[in-house]
Image (cartoon, rainbow, N blue to C red; front, side):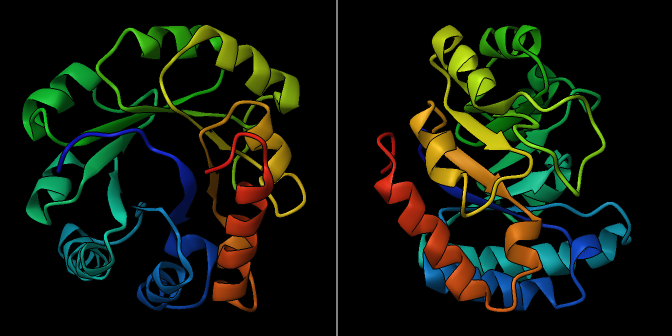
Length: 212
């Protein structure tokens, strides 16, 4: 695929945060208009992860939804995902770029302005920045808040995906502060109605000044 700016609603699928089948969640999220799906798996065997990733790839491909694999360039290539997302402790961006080629996307997590500036000098397509608010899925530093997003936006032209405690109530404010997209885990995975949760996020994003 052609590398392009990453914007909108970015759903992270991680089986650890839901008792429901994440493939069914993927189907519902795609039908409701999610823009990007990341598959993150830290527990299952490589074989099991491959089978799930193949099915999610099929779901996203048919709908034209971008599909990202977390921290596994080999798996991304195996299922022809659109890209890979890396953490600060994962394989270096330059090495991953050599593995997956120039056409696929690379995203990199950051947790400070210094890390954002460093990421901006690398061959990445988007920067994950957070936590913005207190999060139930991450035990990291003090949240950066809305001011943190504004400061980061002033210091990089690379697309920013905000993460950490993003909810229906604060998504529009985060986008208006300069984020190009919002990454969500629990606010969707724990929702009683996946489609409704996704559609509400999309509506809030559209209403933001920086929205799509």
